[in-house]
Length: 137
Image 1 (cartoon, one colour):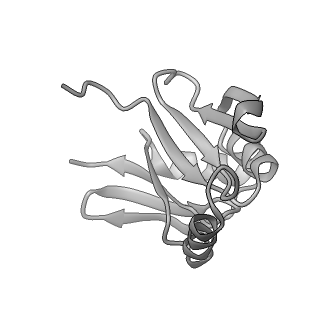
Image 2 (image 1 turned 120 degrees about the vertical axis):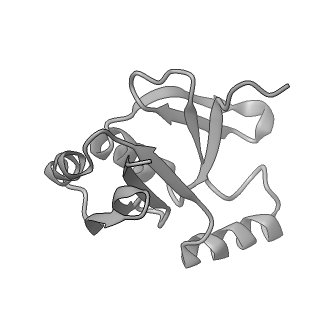
């Protein structure tokens, strides 16, 4: 039986750029940042929201240990902005949007009433869609 999601992979163009965005802009904390020599010095980098230690996001860059064709396919999908999407629940979407803007985040969509609540939309530097939702149902 599956009990809990504890990790989600997010494809990014550049680890340092993604690390800065997720920590400095979104307020996440670093969970793991290690280099794995046994996998071609692959950098294993995870971040997560403070107060939710059971869930981490693994920031992955296309490249070794993934073969060239796979990496090229991932890069193509990333460029189209269709590879990943993240959804975060907040108590107050408008206040969260102002907090994000105060940290230098540009919103693609200001808080808007939608059938399931109030939603704001932004993208990380790699083009991943991020939706901030105040649920009404």
